[in-house]
Length: 192
Ligand code: GRF
Image (spheres, rainbow, N blue to C red):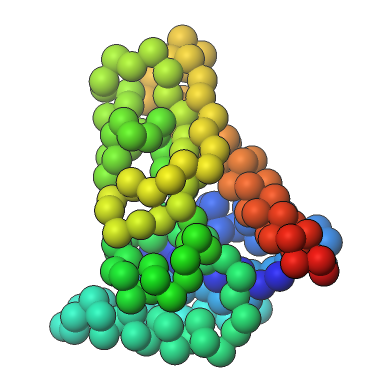
């Protein structure tokens, strides 16, 4: 099946997903969407022949930007939309067009520490456990139904930098596997 990845940043999760999916030919990233022109994600897409679009959110409404995204999505048969460090919230326009088919990854044990500082806040909080969450996307900020979480005890790391490194390793391991298992279970349901 085809997936679309939305990424605004360095794109290390996008790279991990692409690398994993290209190890066989069952699934592929058929579209990369980024709202930042200089993102590592866009650069990687262009270097690797992955169709990619820069969607500007400035000087226009979110609806307008999302209409443009939907136009690109309509041109490909995308089974799953995968947010990987996409820094814009999605509105019902996209969410309702892809019910239960949009997922996100977040670097904390939700519902604790949603938002853009998940790792720092987890580290500073004194929580016993840190980790990652993969969840369906709704209109809220990191509020959708949880698909998978992976945790580790804070005693396994000694600094914020180490915590970040460990969290990213977990992300790069678990996000591709979760995507595969969602795509595979859908194909089994549909008998193909
Ligand atoms: C990841 O930590 C992810 O959990 C969060 O944004 C970050 C994206 O990092 N939603 P990268 O661009 O994939 O390296």
